Image (cartoon, rainbow, N blue to C red):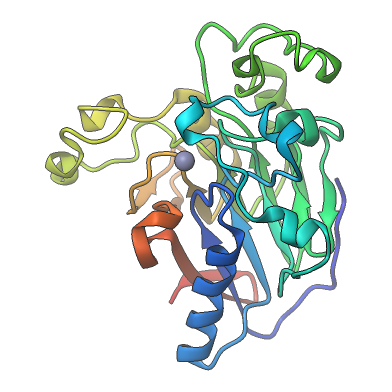
Length: 277
Ligand SMILES: [Zn+2]
């Protein structure tokens, strides 16, 4: 997927948003409220997966999720043109997505005006920044095998489509000069021991050092991004980690749309620097 815009040396603001789970109206309003109260405009928005852009029941049926989590959401208002996204939104896939729809273009596409799926493993250039994204989560058992073709989506388990694989990690590892890396699942080894207590008895994991996957961490080490954004755990967490190269990456993990303002973070960028507001 190639989206380019001119290099921008003047200061811009962009937001990063955690799991939206189909609640597009809430996603838009939380950011519009930030713009209003801060009297600033966002240039674009990055979203870290579990976006759930379902057009209809058929899309919803291609999502891997227990039935109590199957909710059509309000993307159809945007798809039908009744509502518009106010800024360009770029999202990766999580583990709850209509992959029957998204995998129709695995290298990414614009679903409706201003709403871009970044694909399974792609890099884009926008507003002078290079942004790479890896869709899906890790499974030891699925990492080395090819995913079934999109045409098989209703003939096999939806779960077959929620994992990234080795070739996608290798493809991203070859990217150069990545400013921002979008991941759904957290990389391993990003939590400081001083924060360990925060992670006890949390969703999906008990121990802070068992959270995340080593391939995402490997990508962080290889790509040296200034900023890494993650979702999935429905927990806000920020850290700055030392990489094998000696440089540092800021890691910002975002909460879900049901957790108030912890779902987003705003950054400013100018002249090749990115900082949290
Ligand atoms: Zn989620």
